[in-house]
Length: 183
Image (tube, rainbow, N blue to C red; front, side):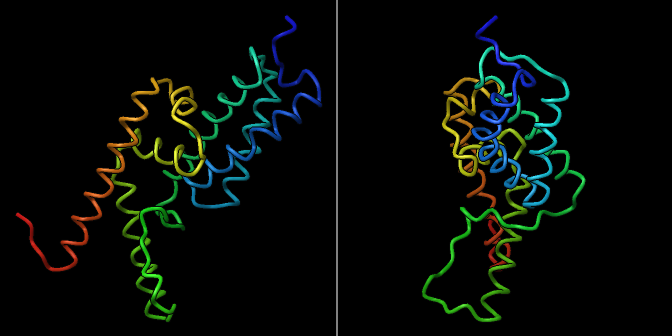
């Protein structure tokens, strides 16, 4: 079939796929692992698996979505082996821009980042993943749906719920730390 794309079909096809998919794969992997080195390794491994298996896809987009699923799963496995991720979920972190970065401010920022990361880790995987895909892989709802095997509408609902739950977890944490006891 002429319309089929084979991962091992030609170096040129493989390079085109690599050039188009690697940036998305990397953004997904780095958000899950919070490690540039690990993200790059996981992306490289996914392309190696694709090439090694000489897989055939209907079109390059299908190959790209297969790679995204492979990287997502590999990154989740990597993250599970690690106790903590090194970077914070920066979108939820709100910094007072009027403050000059002092030693104390850096410590407060680090502690806040850790709290945000802990809050993110409390989200169920299905909600955490849609946020990572949406915010850091810059994927649209349709693409996320294809990767996860769910409808575009379901993706929108999950993104909304993930943002709501993350905000609630962060509010609860700040109330606990502030000595306020909400019953």
